[in-house]
Length: 457
Image 1: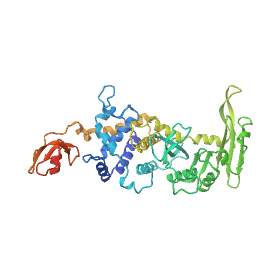
Image 2 (image 1 turned 120 degrees about the vertical axis):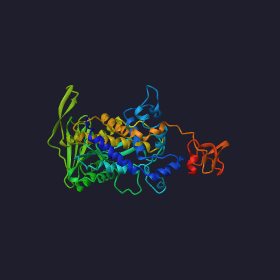
Image 3 (image 1 turned 90 degrees about the horizontal axis):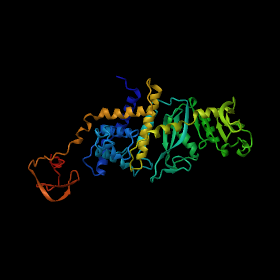
Image 4 (image 1 turned 30 degrees about the vertical axis):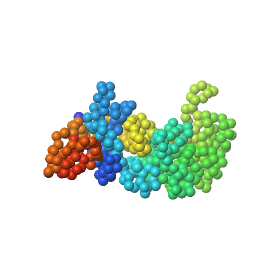
């Protein structure tokens, strides 16, 4: 028998530990009473099965959630319907939570519902350390169209509406940490937003400054940020906007466009040792760095309209290094988007939860590629993980789901008799409508679900 890849088992253990930390019997009891469903009970194994179903929907997508339990020949999914009933899954989804709701009135965090889960996942992502030299910081959008104070609108982006998520990732797309943007903070310092984001993410990963190079785009790059990172020991490079070069007065973009293609201009600030380079090809691009150089010039293939073919053109050395180190967050986004969880929810935090779940699986797959001898692509890895949850837990956990409630309930329990009511009232145990009452206690109790016996014993 082929040996199961290490990372599939590793991901199972990591998510299993996360589920056990999230699951709290006391909080679960509170939510069941808030939902007016006193009979509902949940275990850690139930959560694992629920998460396994969510992972399966990432590569086995159906138009509606209930179709996963359909018995029609063109829709039937035995791996889902045989391990958990539809009503059970809906109840778990309805009562799923990650924090104590009593703390909502005292919390100023707009994302308090998922903050414990986010902190736990970041801790798990960093348990192996920051094992790449090149780090990339960029924004990612989590699609969301309903109302929430943290929802953002960014014009011109592929995903215009949703939650903005700051991510720091390695060169191959492994996410080390993330921070969901909640808007302007009351406790924010005088530093601009882009500076706070970069410093905050670097503090989260707690990396050794001298061992890493940080790349970011023109939203973050400024003369002050490059100087502060250099003082902290970080090597950093990023594209820059025209008005952020400060004392490094380069040729204006208007003047650069008049020059020949592949021309460049640069200025070096000797006081802070910051270099800014402006390069022209089809458009003008400005790069800022606190460690890199202009020379030696490299060669890249670019299309020449005059010659009608690709030709070699000169490119500054700092641009070459930036092209190699940037784009990591886009790879992480692509890994999450290609097999995104298909089941939707009405709660504002549901898309954040499923996005974190998909990101955890994508990270586990990246670890698998780094360490496994027999490498799996992402689809194979996700299938192996989902099937591991469903197969390992399927036997005996929800096997009772097909049994209908027994109608044979004792009519007499310790001298208490059952009598039928003329109209339906609410059962005091399950709060469902019932036509039965205890003749001695005068309490409405249903006998179909065993509430009569449960109340008196």
